[in-house]
Image (cartoon, rainbow, N blue to C red; front, top):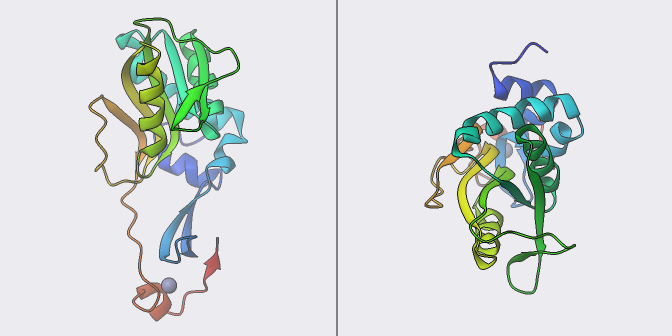
Length: 186
Ligand SMILES: [Zn+2]
């Protein structure tokens, strides 16, 4: 693999980060599109980025890794594997998220929260709350891509393998449209 030192190049190499002219589900136009499962289907590439998260938090001695469904299932497993710890995931519940399937958080357990793409931080906040309800101790947040432009605050150390400031455009005032670039509907 040629992109050991450059996570965003790795994301482009596996097709998870695409450059072009995209119509997002919000209706806005964007020069960049992220398809996380293009990465998550590739075990070697996923391991490479998860290792950055594991290495960043190893000295903080996490005892448990937890993420939200769906991508967080894969990420919590892989980061936990690299740290030699348990990896669990929180599912949607009536209110927020909770740990089902017999998963347990021990009182005071030092828990690293992981997720794939940080957009608004809603899912991650729900996992933090689920850990706290179980009397666990959230110690940090690790994500593959922060596309919130560094604007999200959890009150915990945050590490992103890649930071993207995604500028999007309203239909009708899009420079890519003005340039006649072909539009891909996502
Ligand atoms: Zn456009």
